[in-house]
Image (cartoon, rainbow, N blue to C red):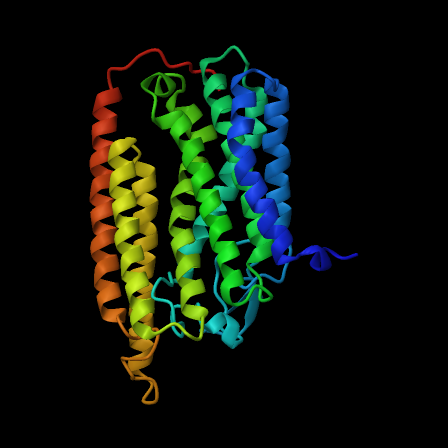
Length: 347
């Protein structure tokens, strides 16, 4: 039996729900000491390898991207979230031709490169951490949410495929939101507690936790991209509903960027949200320019064009707002930690 035959929407949805229900129990097992540090590190590595394999399997909606400049089709399976314009199924999600108003330009998805590479560095370098080092406790706390995020993303790779039509597309939306939720818990492990922040050096943050911050920020934004795609692709969805959901999503992303950046002193999260919103604004710019060049595609009431001007404005304002708050958070964090001591500087 092939893997595609096993890819059943009810099965994938059930596995996702089961994984979500198991998350708090697994966290408690780690807190109780039921898992050794070696086992925890092994789980991190295995889950990362599983997700990396799942991402490499072709056939997802975002698996084929057509270059508008050259007209050549290329595979972007290793970069989740890319676009294609080779058929209607995928054109509906593209920045230039799509119906959704949350359609980031393709360059935004290059962030997956640093995420995957950074998390590869993490799952390898964690094996060189002494269990007695202060940072080990932080890694332990972040590990189960990190590993579960890899599992949810593996399931998302199964669900973000053409066979998941109509309401079934909300399965992939839910799974991507689950990735963001899990990464939020991992992110909280090294940002919320002042004691946790004193447990690692700047170098250790770069090795272990920066990739998680990027992953958390990007999947938060990507969840909204997936949601808007699911809404826009339904034939029964009106232009006004598509625009409303798109505008609300940009406001929500901006609010999340501001809140998390300030509440957790997390400038990286805000910067990633800013990156995503600038990409959405650029996508709307591309769509409007493309429409202006086509005499048969200037109906501003059609899905994808209705609300595009407002979306471009909201996204630009949101991007600059999140960027400003991110810069303020970084400034405050730098000066608040400038005189701090007590870092463990052993990688």
